[in-house]
Image (cartoon, rainbow, N blue to C red; front, side):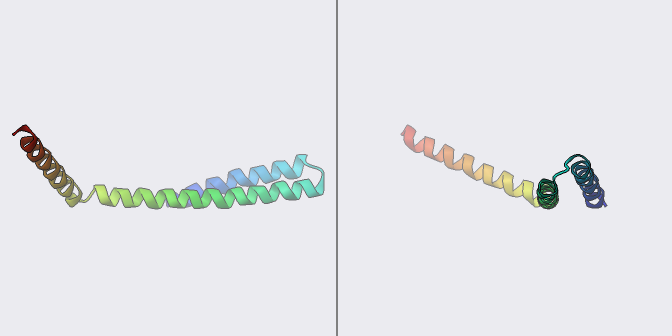
Amino acid sequence: MLATLINNTVDAIQTSKKIFVDTFVKHEGLAKSLNEFVDAQTDYTKKAIDATMKAGNEVYKTVSDRTFYTDTMKAMQESAQALLHTQKKEGK
């Protein structure tokens, strides 16, 4: 649902750019080039939004899982113990 809303917003903005070009750029070749650029922007923007949403969903899945926190805490404890063990050896 959110992706549809965002994509519709992108389409509305890009369509307004094309209307602007068609209205104010009278040279046919230049107008064609600018409209192709707007099409490329549209494609890029939608892909960037999709990638961002996918990454966001994956991060949410990871951090909302309890094992993420238990694994992180375990790794921190192991690192702290290794550091303390190293410091004790150097102190002797």
